[in-house]
Image 1 (cartoon, rainbow, N blue to C red):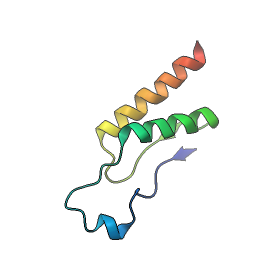
Image 2: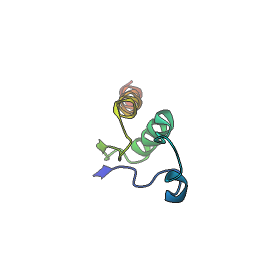
Image 3: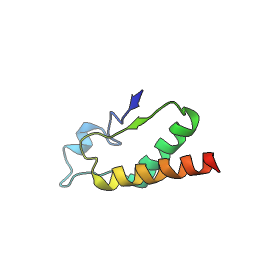
Image 4: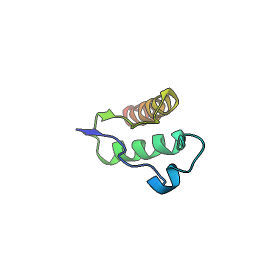
Length: 73
């Protein structure tokens, strides 16, 4: 099963007026994914949408690895 965010925090009317890309909060996204993985351990593919970059992916990876390390210990 795969899961990825499908909507931005702001609605499109707000996003269209921004003069920069709203990158969201990589730490918050990673925390939310770790919570989902803890609740649904069968999930094994995590991703993002446009605007998701290497910072987001790294934070997600670290959060999920930390969850696995806690589960093994």
